[in-house]
Image (cartoon, rainbow, N blue to C red; front, side, top):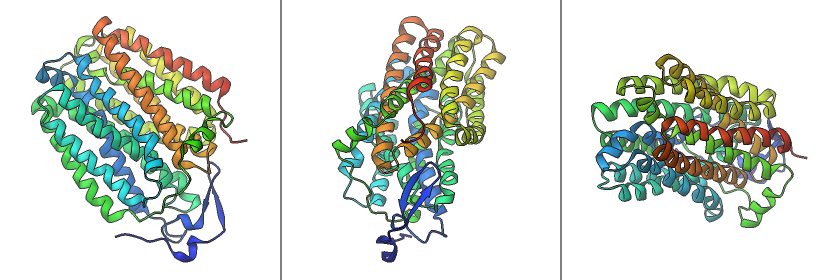
Length: 415
């Protein structure tokens, strides 16, 4: 049921300071401060889960997709590139193009695009058609992510913002568990097209839940091009945005091509691939709690440690990934190490840009999608030219550069 903002609160002058130093007016909230809208928070989390499930599916279905469409795995992997490139556009321009619209119908429109994209992918007769359908998904993901954090912090009292964000971010490991191991297994026993039809049904169910649970929220902030420029020129922001790009370049250089690695280097079949990817997803889910505490206690250390750990694990995987048990352990540790990256990155930008959370988050999400685009495109090229093991060597380079940049240039508190 829709919830309208209390007019009495809409003009209140009181400003509350939430963890991470994000100032919010009382009127920004859909109901009284003592009544958090947990149903709406869960609806946002389910949106994250459904959208990212669709985004991650090609990582577990790359081999059957390539085989069915008659293309190389590296070319099929460009489904990730197309999605992330469109996501970059969606993240940058959604806050600006929708700045005069109520946030609920805007968020619902992204769920509609998700359903359309998954259905078109399931019916795709060619790689070109499939890539076009994935562009639709990218626009939805980019737009949704640009607004997710800024919406979430308006749904609960200040003291509960950290908990609400952790609930929303739990949609990321949930999507990894659903999309990669489960998608990989179902793609073998049924069809990759059936998997995308199931993702279509998931998206439709999430749309219904969001329509019932999300409150109506007025737009907030300026969201113009000059706002983005202002954010980028603030001390430490530019370096942080570049670091986020590098982290996701390296990670998705790895992640987009993990199945070909496990098949060609480790020698696993469908069941073994699914089990290994399940280990990644479960470790990622468990790690999200530990890494959240780490980010809360020492944000800069968390921002440095995670890309550094992922780079080392990738290099070790390229050397020891031929054996099943080391590969399983390293992939699980990689999932654990990556778990805190989205939480820490979101915490960082909301802390550094408390006055323009939608634009700041949109800018960060755009940088992440730029990184995913470069990682997916570069990883596919390395895979086709040099083999799966080389992907994990190449991906370590941007991760190490990101850790160095964060250590030397990135601030974690606004001046």
